[in-house]
Length: 552
Image 1 (cartoon, rainbow, N blue to C red):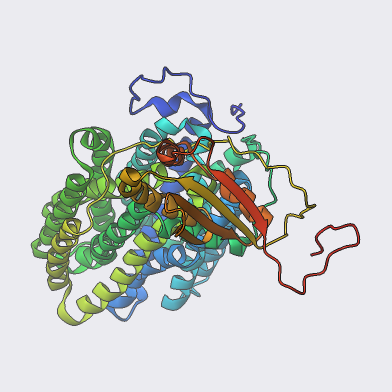
Image 2: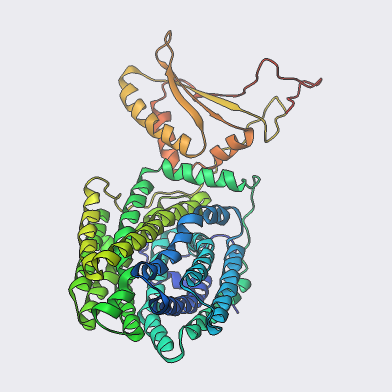
């Protein structure tokens, strides 16, 4: 019987105890979903080998082969933000169930069309695109749900285990896929993928995840998406991850996109050779997952990512010059390890830099950047290979990877840190003299501070960070003004569209944000707390009810 679980995982470990790499397996729900995901991932990899190799048989150009990779990543770039907003607004277990069921149905149709010999290159791309539309819907909910399965401080270990699980299947799945395609054809590979969804669907159906109580109404999908984009745009550390993730996807993804042509043209192999090469990449990825925790402890973030770029450049170079499958496989071992080191580090950085209320959207935007880079790179490098040869394209890819690593000199990643992003839950809704409705607005807020001359420089520096946090969490038109007649008085002003938006804004404050507020309080020289005024804006023709209540 699958263990029941509701809300966030409870951490039974001592606060200061070091988290082991396997500690997430102490939580039954994580074990169950992780195990079922192995089966699902295995089926997806078998399907990927079938699709890629079948395209080499029915395609008329190299770029159509590379577009198989693009068709699997384009849906994430297009729909991930919507999926992230859904993940943060609805029950994540149910979202994953819908996504898995959709992929099962589409995989069934792909199998049927292949058996009936109705598949064309563009139809194959359409089916792979639809399957990965399901992946795009599933992925933000799956990644965000890690925090529902394990305590927050175990999230990095859980992310590494998820990566290791996927790459365990990648180490054997492609080879199995190659055997299946060689022995029974691509249709059998597509059938295996359709069956692989069943185990995860059963596990998700038995997971009793209770949706947390929502003290406030659910945001509309459009508002939730805008809030996610705003949060990421106002979070510099996440922005750096987006740029580096796009650069890595654009360059490193080309190796996997062109690998079927490497197997067919450069080393003169068949589907089994292609599967074995992907398996070598997977073995390297497992090794990368196993050492990623230790690497994060001994190396700064930026050094770790630059090594990943450089290591993958070696992989691309070897694939471009090698004419022997075993030599290419050795290069892919290095590439697989570097892939996991970079991707898992990007994922962990985003998760640990984001509070729970917006983590699904932040992860989805990160995925849009990374997989958008993979999709664009697969197409561009595929066209380049079509005109200049696969070997030349891979040599250029290796140079581009080195340049991608050099971006770190301009946009270095933040150091390893784990700020407390749990909700502060100190703010309470004030008692109002007017009977406001949630939709009442616009709301104007002013906060008055008294600051000594010697503290002004520090006050301005802290208020700059305060401004970023305010705007990140939904405030508009933030300004800081100084009284001309009483220069010791400084007034912070901002607006929210409605009273409900004002409540959301204050509920989003985290313990890490509170540190900024405490610094401002320490600089305030008044005998009482800074004075807060909350006002509703009204035009001169606003109508009042007979009882003095606001009409809206």
